[in-house]
Image (cartoon, rainbow, N blue to C red; front, top):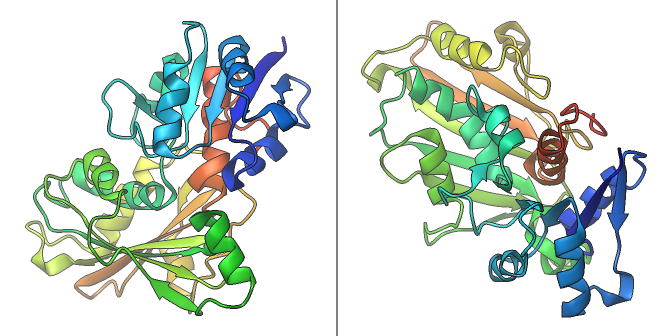
Amino acid sequence: MTHTIFIDGEAGTTGLEIRERLEARGDLALILLGDRRRDVAARREALNEADAVILCLPDEAAKEAVSMIENPAVRVIDASTAYRVDPAWTYGFAEMAPGQREQIAEATRVSNPGCYPTGFIGLVRPLVSAGIIPAGWPVTVNAVSGYSGGGKAMIAEFESGQAEAYRAYGLSLKHKHVPEMTKHTGLERPVLFAPAVGAYRQGMLVEVPLQLAALPSSPSVEVVHGALAEAYADCRFVEAAELEETEAMTGIDPEGLNGTNKMRLHVFGDRAGEQVRLVALLDNLGKGASGAAVQNLNLMLGLDEGTGLT
């Protein structure tokens, strides 16, 4: 059976990445508008004729596109921030919790996670669920991404050589990912999020430092690692690196998983010490965006979740 797919916003960075992953597949047929992609009537027709729609649009444009869908059979994946904390939409991080894959598979509306939140939730949610991090605990997350996550203007700036080597941003502490990070980890107070962008195209590191001795249960490095390893033991795309592997590392390359839908979680820390640095490595355009969208699409169409992904 061939499924028809419409990518609304296929000319953007995420849209192009999704199209590249889908167009070679024989089980899917893409609805391509070409020069008519700004034609409202053509878009409306495509939005209602496709078996599944992937929205790669700014928030308000995504909401407008959803309002144009009248066919109840159309399934939607939205890559914007618009619906990530909306209870009427299913959150599209398949590995987030037991039963999440099944919820995605049954949903007609799925909100694709953000790239930074994917790393943060992957690290923190299992620890909150296990009681290692109390829900009311103040949690800080530091992260650096390649400039491709910033859209066409930022890409042009960095590729022209006019940008600095490293740029901290979100300095108002009101980054739009904070509600998503807080809700889907089960935390009760807003996360303190310190994002940055580096002078490389794609790939990201998301880091959560923890003072183990300050936590109520004073967990060991092994206990923290064990909770992550257990949470992702049966996952194809998310894994907790072995402590021995992490202990042998002297650095970590943010580009290390580029081109894949994988995420690797590291627990850095002296086993006899009282501190850890939790680090998630992922491709901000892969597991952090287009790869996750394709994984969600596969689940929603009843296909193997890894079809077309590495």
